[in-house]
Image (cartoon, rainbow, N blue to C red; front, side):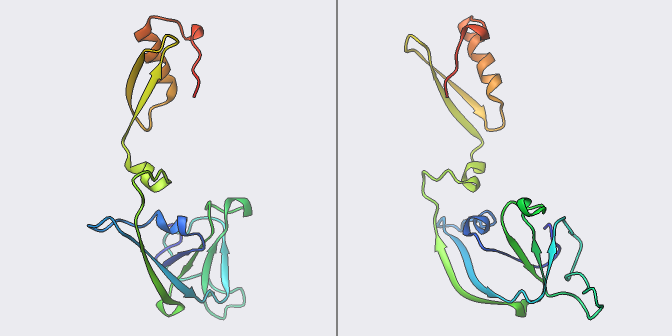
Length: 160
């Protein structure tokens, strides 16, 4: 929670999807809500411990919400997001239930994959399959391939 204890909203469904978890049937749920941001505070850095927006400059009480500025705007988030701290500021309109397909390779599904099976093919057509963690650098695969083949890295070209 980069912006304290509040209700987090996003204008991109893909951003919201990251925070969903499938139920027993594999369905995920997103809520479409109307939100009243009122007088928002534009935030460019995390403020994890807040329970309400910052005080107005004229000391008339707190602002109404926090709008996280994106990296391109000088902020700290990739995609637009908004935080409200009062439940009365949101009005649910729809609950959308959906499933990711088996072939889905979105950021959310990709992270659920722990290993990748990488198939390499020699110039003579023989195959070698490597099982790699998703965090393994490809250079390690290239070294392992050359070691198995008994060739120097400089004698081989890797095409991805």
